[in-house]
Amino acid sequence: MEKVREQLQVRKERAVLVAAAHRGRKNHNDNLVELSALARTAGAIVIDRFQQKISRIHPATYIGKGKAEMLAERVKKNRADVIIFDNDLSPAQIRELEKIIQRKVLDRSELILDIFATRAKTRQAKLQVDLAQLEYTYPRLTRMWSHLDTLAGAAGGTAAGAVGGIGTRGTGEKQLEIDRRLVAKRITELKRQLAGIDKRKLREIAGRAGHYKICLVGYTNAGKSTLMNALTAAGVFVEDKLFATLDTRTRKWILEGASEVLLSDTVGFVRHLPHHLVASFKATLEEAVNADLLLHLADASNPEAFEQIESVDNVLADIGCAQKEKLLLLNKADALGDIAVFEALQTVYPDAICISAKTGLNLDRLAAAVLAKIKGSDVTIQVSCSAGNGKVQSFLRANAAILDRQYIDSSVTIKARLGKNQLALLKRLKPRELEVIESF
Image (tube, rainbow, N blue to C red; front, side, top):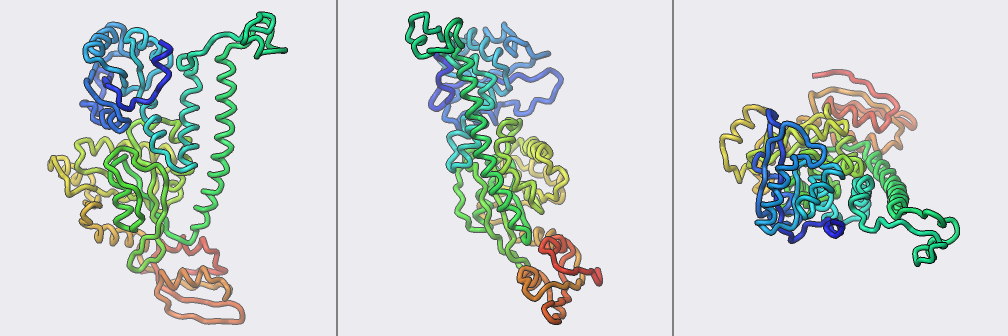
């Protein structure tokens, strides 16, 4: 079965989707809706679906030998090219399934990695995807490499022996070990390059200390890029496909009474996002970690909106954003299908704002809610700084009502009224003195 592993991409291939759920447990995505969308995004043609309830994971085939043989018959009947599991499989399970089915078998993580590889456009995104793929591939080399012959020593008189030369005589070195060493070296190099990008990214984020930072998060294809364009005219690429964009973009969003609010887009999440991708996209996800407010977009027209919201919350918890202040947005109000799902969402999340990024519905209400989050209750403050500290004075002119200003020698003392939540932003600019005189 070596040949079936030569190509991991599933573009233009006939695919059978498989989902195995444990008996008695809640089965998300009963109709394999998400996996179907992922497969189509990768370019596959979905021709059949195979769902099974299992009492335990079979160590050899995950679904059991009998079910695997049943699946093989359906695959042969439908002339399928690839079988895609909604579960994550071990290398041994994939190898055994391929022996039984005689077709290429991919698991969920492998499919997502393939999609990311086709979507990566910038150097950073390409490096991140390469790293994630290699880290996923490394423990699976024994089933993916087709050239596992042993290199003979020079004494063997073979071409391989001639290549081996001094130091490779005797039993030789398995090609697998050479491949592993090359992959490990490449992983180290990718991590080194990404570390440099990460440092620049973190410096870039740190340079926004005086700005209120808002980050868009949400399930893939929830409409984040569309909302980004609607609020900032950013010109972000928009397509009705999963993972249409992988790169973070930050733009100014002008709000009444608040200048230079920074809005960032992030890569979309999915259920069980492969941990290799979460690790590789650390710099991209850092936007969410350092944001003052998260706008969580949910596709209100999707029947599985509740599960998608839960999945995003789980990923946010994984990256340390569980306690971050969030505002839930129920997007795609213009495309509501099952009104019962939408009504249930409003009942469970009464503070959520219903919007349509496509038509502009309630975007003014969103702006007002964000402005209220930024300001909080009013306070009167007295600030002292050097007369040359333009950052503090510029911030107060843009975000506060100036009540009094006095210049003494090379210092300036300003009395102003602004939102309580904006004090943290002002403190980041390191004024000489900052005192709250009165709260309202």
